[in-house]
Length: 283
Image (cartoon, rainbow, N blue to C red; front, side):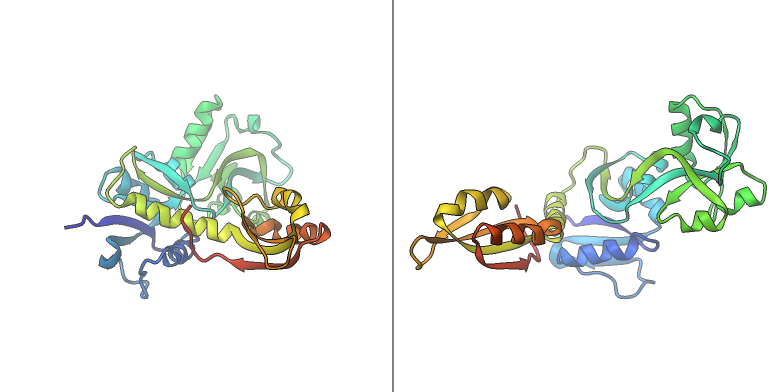
């Protein structure tokens, strides 16, 4: 009997829907009802458990589940025996200190302050590493109100657009404590059965999201310059055309720069330039 890979997925919050969308792109079944806490995809040899994002690192670190998707900030704050193995490219945010606008400028001013946060482990580790003595209090929920209510001088929290901080009269200061995003985690350095297939599928989706396939025709005399513009992942495919002196080129190019590359190819003589999406790949 083939072992089933047990995977933890955020059941709510900013990471939940993006994680589910990625797993669907990988070809895995996903729940249709948000009340569903477990889903078995027997055909693909995986079982999904929908859990609180903050708990996922603990379940994986204890070996109860094999793999998890959570935030880097939640992983490090948990202190669990789990390790990041792959960044997933969504849920990006900065973890920052923030205080009343205009009052704080540098992190040295944290000395002796009261800091409210939902990430006590992460903040205490940072303060210790920087030899700063401060009182750290755990608050779950909207920590922004703690300064206005007089229970904290400073907060430490995830900052996305900063609009929530501004509404509370706060502003971030100092360097970022941590740049976070969604990550794939496993217990220590273990490689559970089925992990490599699961990881390859996710890596294929990440490449498909970030690259497109570009095809174009170009005179043979200008192929060297064209290949400099479109080197591909390993090497572009170059095929002769029926039209004498011309070749067809196919290569993967970064999605973000595809339009600029098309402009440059046209300038050096390429014609019939086509760009198509990549839905999945293995490299």
